[in-house]
Length: 150
Image 1 (cartoon, rainbow, N blue to C red):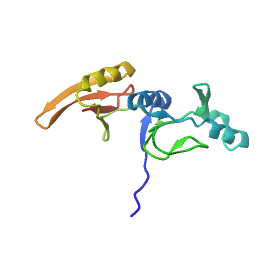
Image 2: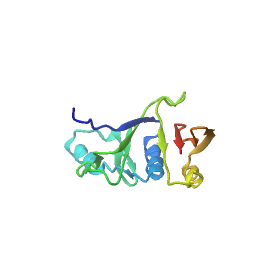
Image 3: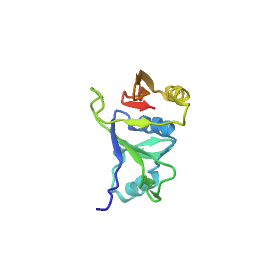
């Protein structure tokens, strides 16, 4: 079987704010879909009301994405073809614990420094865990999605 390409999709109230947070948190790039959007608008294939202006260029109102800077991408659309997270607007707010989360692994002996950096970006510490198998910090992003820093 050929391995499948995939992306992680996260529901969000504000996909662009989530995209900015996770790009900074992970050292990823925010995808710039403006050339593709402009082309679709010019062709009449997308209505202007499905767009907003972000970073002084057109963006999809309900979608934003980040991609790993070393992975391939489609130049015409800036859509990542490797490690990628897509944030999609949903009407409801998060209401329960995540069933899926990211584990971040900073360089050895830099966990507390990384936790502080992430707090500076808008994350919050939920709890610190220390068990016989290891220790980590459970945090939440600006919309309350949990993730761990090991």
